[in-house]
Image (cartoon, rainbow over all chains, first blue to last red; front, side):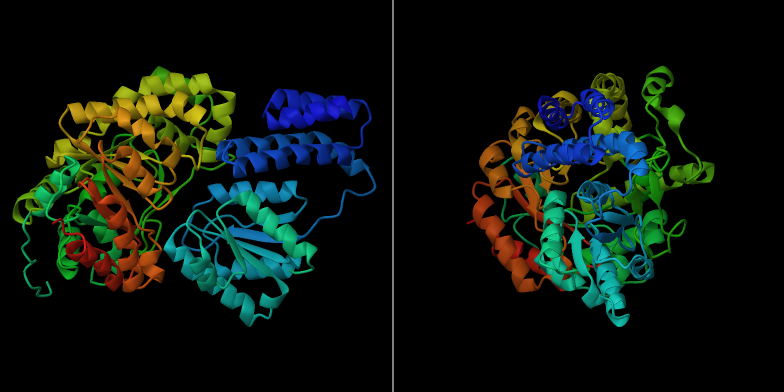
Length: 215
Length: 385
């Protein structure tokens, strides 16, 4: 048990080398990789709590995401050789909308969604509405996430929602918008279901949707 | 130009009003500053490209919006965007170092310019470049792919124009300009170079390297920030803070890697006689008290809605003029009565004793009646007895 707690603590302390060392040791000792992932998640979740309490900041989230991703890479060969990896929680199509290129928040949200077990399709920045539509169709996504900081992004968000509507997909997805300035006014204008300026909160909102059978 | 009524005379000129506020005294009324970039593009015959590259046309557009809105207290000089963006020195705005998408070049002539974060996987600036900067100096990193010699040559023609328009604002309209020059911290600059996500990992992996490069860069950056004023004769310098806020880094990182440099830059500009605007994007609420270490009564602090302006008044009221902080999207989505309410809230909480300006960055697709509502409320409700 001790090594598991050590790994949780190493993640929380953002100690990269110690985290990777412990992951490797656990692999050598024959631990179940899915279980190691769960332990890493526990560490990242605590970091999220500290972020919400303003004890940790964006830098710490980025580092937590890095440690999780690098650790997952160490586990990849073993996960692949196993029958099946854990089933994805949901499918998210995300992008910074047309006319806007801000993506710091989006990138961290993508990482946290991956930590949460979601299948994530990150379209990038300055994304045309049609690209969102195509990807939602192709991947049968149940969540769409728009990112944006500028007011021009708002028009693009609205346009994208309209396009999903005219293609009969609006009722099949839940839409969340994210960015520092987004608020209820933005959400209504964009025709979205939720808004957040906090990536951890965003993941929680999506978790709730899927738990209640939405999306 | 469209015929306008002359701007209504008030007890003080805008120059007097703004300077009085910076000195922490009560002027005739609360100064108001809509920070307008490309708004005229949506209303009159000027393109976003001309706002940057054509000094006459951009001055015409700035004068138009000034008159259309019945006058306000701080303005841009025509051509100054060019001076900032096509800046031969590595400052916060320079196209030779940062990935600017400009109208008429990579964007439609009417799209506002955008600054793109450096790529995650293949940043413009690699980890090993920290050492190269110290070895070769920063100019070594100039990138001529996005702009070239022709753009540089044009600077010598635009400089005198900006000087003429700066003078015109200060003496004819009696309105101070702002952002005649700009500087940011080495931390902000390196974050732009590396891309913020890469840089945040660097903060954990190579903090000593960041310090070493910052020590090397800071004096150069102070010098380079004076390039604009040296051309235009302007008196103001903007010092921008973004990546050092509570939306990005912890207080420990702020104290180690950010604040010493920020303090040095601002203090040196004040000592050289510049009016310094601190342009602080995102949330600085928990680090406002550090600003008390800066010279008193010589600076004004612009903040957006992420920073608590009422806390700023409480902490800095007797030390530094504060300016802000309506939420930009209100000017697109809101109504004049909503704006009026918000402005009154700021005036009620922060105007007492002077040292307050009301303002916001105005989105390029704002409604004019909303901007006018902010201005008019300051002119009526913002009067000091």
